[in-house]
Amino acid sequence: MLMDHTVMNYTAIADISARIAMLFLKLPMLTGFSVQDRATLTRDRETAPLSGDLCVADVSLDAWAGFAAAPQVQGEIVQALRGVLGEHPGSYEVLRGHTFARAFH
Image (cartoon, rainbow, N blue to C red; front, side, top):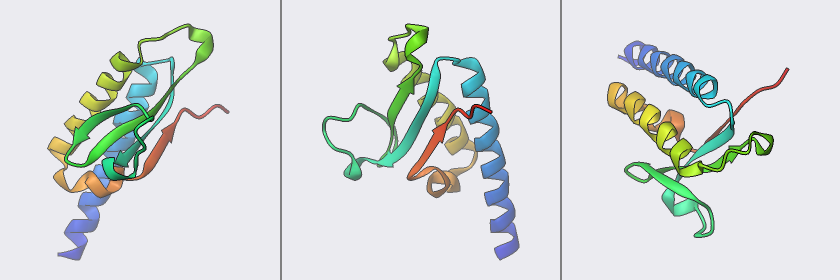
């Protein structure tokens, strides 16, 4: 049974990674975001409810792009991550407490 759980985690991680990579491609102004427990967030941080106690927070947009539609971007992130959570219900712990950032090389 442990093997099945491990395979499921790898599958969820691979799917999450692919979807987040697609988000960064689809939203070139997005530079990063985090997934946090609602209880750990201060009131001054902008958040978007994800599922249960999880929220998308700290959405960072590239300033040079002149893009100021943070709620739109948050919505896109939430939609993509809800899709992953729907397909991989055990992936809450994979997302919880992680920050995702665009990598420049």
